[in-house]
Length: 408
Image 1 (cartoon, rainbow, N blue to C red):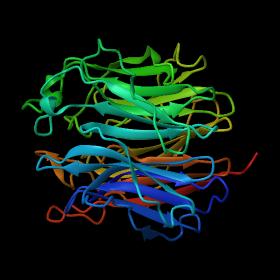
Image 2 (cartoon, rainbow, N blue to C red):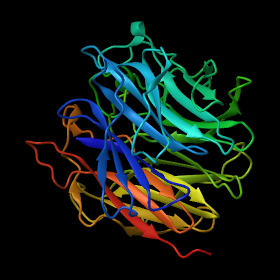
Image 3 (spheres, rainbow, N blue to C red):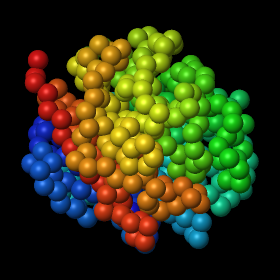
């Protein structure tokens, strides 16, 4: 059951694509896939599993100045809790990988994500748990922080982690980092407020309150972060595993430094994808814009990417099915900073959203994100797809599509 992909495009050769994903069945694992012909064909590369470990999980991928970086955690114990954060590098665009190095001997690092800037600095963010606050697919206490660390020597050494989220926020998660241009870091995350049902994995219906979508901006080296509220009324539409929440999305246009935040919520009765824009480094935000046509069915799990005045989005959409089950991958694009959008279906066929491993009884888990990487001439999309699945197998695959653009 492959899911939650990330895709990276070789900055020197757009035909070279690398995708990583996590695997939830038949056992917990991770995978690397490569293409050298722009996605026409794919092969699997060996995953660099650390000696003595057997469960690499939750990988992330970024292209640095001259090499490819892969982060992941290893799982331990019957509870499959994260034991350590690892980093591996590739000098040949993902064909081979150097022996992974343990970044931090920090157990209970959840939701690890990675970012890099143009100077070559690497960032890692994660939700820091502890043995005494971790239950079975749950947290038994509030107050766990989102933290960040950086490396200026290609991952050989790392700064001490600093707290990103305010200590006044009791239940936070799903942090997504984006590197600024001046050694600063932007981190988008959810504040789950008083949602003990999902935090502690209690029985009950979907949380009746609202979440906040928050942006923290600061200097990891100096350790000071300031927060702004991107969206104060995120209406949840499903239960979720707090270990593996669905991520929001954050993108920065490198040509203008305009920030874009994307998320899904059910304010209109069913989940829709919304985007807000900030032109002042996250201090203030535009009104939310729905990026797709309005329908009484679900649109959700969006990932954004921005390049040279164009903002792209990949998301999952059930608009064509009155039963709100059959799902397809859709791509949307905006050339006016997210004010208006055009979209198209990029999946060749739809799939059943009710198939896959069940982390929550009766609610199949098809992953925490989709993957999107945009260039001036193309957008490269990957998503979790259940078209080859059944109730018996729960098979999930990663599918790919390319959208071409004329270069300005």
